[in-house]
Image (cartoon, rainbow, N blue to C red; front, side, top):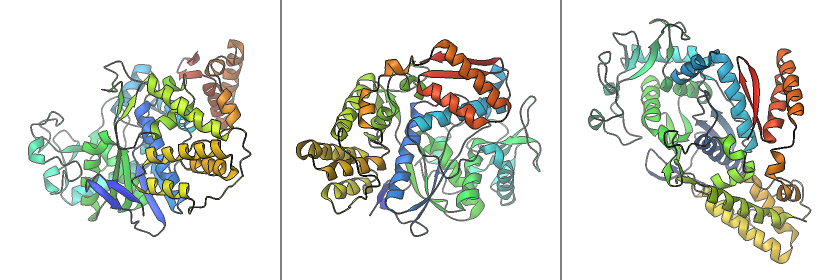
Length: 459
């Protein structure tokens, strides 16, 4: 039986869905004001792996991953670029989808945008006000009253009394309590706003996910996931809002993937060790990056370095080499009584232990190389598929040359494709426009849209 480490209880627990054979999963997605970095890639790949395993073991999965398309950073970036918020967010949503597709990430069942659910957020905030869990501050903002929720801190383990002196707690005269957090921000000049009973404004960040969870997965659902950095305050605040509004348990299992480090230091723009997905894909095939992410357990820190990526590439090469020359059975059905399949299942059912699962793939590769038994190659490819690996043609994968990929198109050809993309967007053919962007991206050419037109650069 599957056991999941629950961040709420701080232990592994047997997974028991609320509805038999059905999983309801929500993961906090991206705030779309810039390109995705390696931390975003880890979230996308990790929970894609989780979804794939549930599906492989017979579950129906409803997977919701949201998009935050309005917040302070988005507004600031749009103003800096002298472009509309809609233009900015649409551009980076397209870029995010290109990155996730390149990494072999399946589309979630639903991918709601925050601006599509403002009415739901307003309704939920009103419920919290009516029940005494929220109040309107003297500045017109609406705040959640943390001291009204006795269980505040149960996810992160942070005791409210200890937080008063904490550096992360902002103090202003508009709040009744320095720990209270904003649910609704009063409209400022030159900012987007929506109508609400307490005045024009926009939602705070935390209320977005609570409202969208309720809309798609109901008041109480199975699994909520995200990066470890979201455990406090974001997920803690989600619990407080949702359980106060709905008088029921919000989520049964909380899953958090570990931090990304670069050469054993925390990844940070200020340290100059910040890598976007596009930076990395300029030098490594996307599947190498996916393999690198999954080779570490999702809860452990992921340490990025060129040497680790090179080692991941060499390791993935070995797996593909074992498949080379084999005619693989299409739609091969896994026999879970097979010793390798059993070991793989045991690893994945132990809190999605992908390092052990991948080690079993290498055992199968060795078996394939030693015996040449076709079923071993079939099983290797089939188990790899569950992790989103080993689905390329081995010959093509092994012969792939990053340098040639980055110089496939001449400047004239690139400019011609850009003009075709502009023409497609003018007539509303966004499928074609996205396809052109993706083709160029896969060739190592990045398009950058701005109010002044489209520029390009080679990675």
